Amino acid sequence: MTKESALPFIPFTRPSFDQATIDAVAEVLRSGWVTSGPKLAEFETALSEYFGGRPVRCFANGTATMKIALQVAGIGPGDEVITTPISWVATSNVILSVGATPVFVDIDPITRNIDLNKVANVITPKTRAIMPVYLAGLPVNMDHLYALAKEHGLRVIEDAAQAFGSQWHGQKIGSIGDLVSFSFQANKNLSTVEGGCLVLNNLEEAKLAEKFRLQGLTRQGMDGMDVEVLGGKDNLTDVNAVIGLHQLKQLPAFQARRSALAKQYFDVIRNELKAANLEHLKLELPVEDFTHSNWHMFQVLLPLDQLNIDRAQVMTELKDLGIGTGVHYPIITGFTLYQKLGYQTSSTPNAQRIGQSILTLPLFPGMADEDIGRIARSLIGILKNHLKK
Image 1 (cartoon, rainbow, N blue to C red):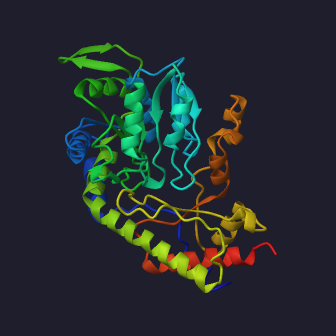
Image 2: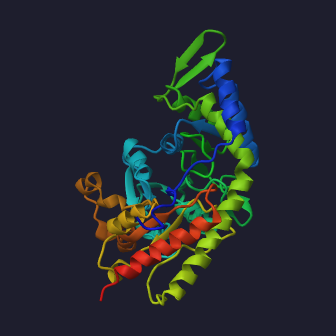
């Protein structure tokens, strides 16, 4: 056993819940009101204040928030929605689920987000919306995005699942824009274990979202009920909501810690490459943006053309050294479902390459400073050992 492998395992992410949060959950359980109730209302109010007074509604997960955003926008069969092929597959699955067609645009090789310069080329009379994804918390150019939408009369549904706490020129993502969807899943910067929220434009949209959230139901008086639209069962519980309330209070500290760890990654990886005489290695780091990004993840692109192993082997060797990693994400159009629908990975070559080489390294507030050095040394060591001769 090596010295590195004898150390504690570092997962690629881990949520942080303090004792006050645990106590608050226990109090909700003792109250007997564990499903949607007063804590959900309190959480939605707090989120609305966070986003500058915009209406906010919470849901059971971040997939529901995106699907309901599409429904609120009136998007359905025969419509097209432009999006990115590098995302969690839920992004495009929800477009299919409402009967619409995803139209994939290649990504920018630097930001790894949808290339807005290529969007206009695929707009047709059927196009109803653009759904950008802010990979690892880095937003697209919001000015460009909304100029495009305005020029072509399109809705924007922001898949900001990873971008809670991100900003655009000093404005919080979610405090501006059209429909903005966030995830609160366990690995997110703010977690409710499972959950999500949708930021809407007005109370009319918020009321419609509420209907879609719970079977299309509206209530009047003590016993009046009606169902006007087809809804689902996507409500967030008070147990989840109270976790979110405490996470929101801790968000500034979480954000500061993530940024500090990300800065260390840049410094340590560059130093390790220099020390190993590997400055020629084409290990691509993310955009070094400490103004807009919330540093949800730290992702590198492996120099696979310089190695005699694939990404899976790199991940396996890191795991053997006690370091967890992730893949966020393989290209969506490579999945069997999308291949059967006629999509081809070759139509978006940047996404094809990045989907094969992207690797997510550990990044979460509970990490120790020395973890960064251990991860960087281990990664660089593996790459050095497997360079093509």
